[in-house]
Image (cartoon, rainbow, N blue to C red):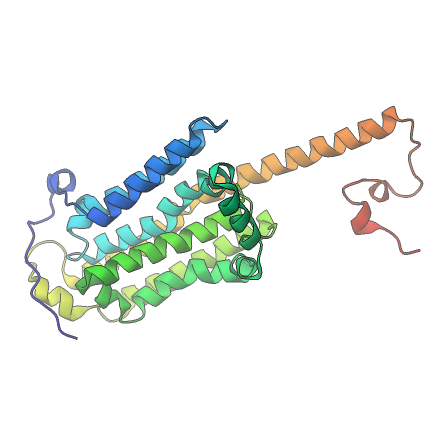
Length: 310
């Protein structure tokens, strides 16, 4: 693979953590367009401020990882690129999904567009993409494909390939968090317990990838040799740090999702309990006598599941 000379950058120090900035024009324009569109759509709606804050925070995270020192040194240090990719897959999409953008779009889109989204949003392709096994692959595969194939080296040398990889990471993460948080309407109802198992699977694969990068050969040696870096950690140490970021950092970045999942789980249980109480109160007010049999056979929520055969 042909590798061009990479212009050197100043050593990464305590000051450059805060002073090193660059302009990633596509990322900034996308963030501005989505932010303006979201705020304009939320205006005049009964929309929770927390959702707007979450969505805009996701866009801010996108700008920070592409324009701060992470964007300046992302082709110079392996661990910086690993941090950037982890945020793009695990943090930015989670914040965007917490903003419930699909619900907002459905509320404010023209009737024809809203109808098209509703029709195709429950079609076979959407059903397949949100199937638990599919979203597990969507969450786990991006890092495996990126770091275990020549794609990683290509993403370092080509700005177009690097941009497409970033888009892929954000979209893959958003599909996962959108389908598992279920703040927006989804093609299929999913179990919160299944989401926990998928998260556990992701932890296992993160650990396996981390070990491979820690003990395996150096990635993209031609590119990093062309950088001619004389400061910071050596190539092996740099990759070991990056492996730790992908392994431990990915798991830590997933903790907010687990917290949001438990909150969503508790709220769903509370809604289900209130709905059950309301049904029982209505039956009592109507003077209906309790049915015969075991208690779960008379529970409206469990009657279908435990109904006896005639």
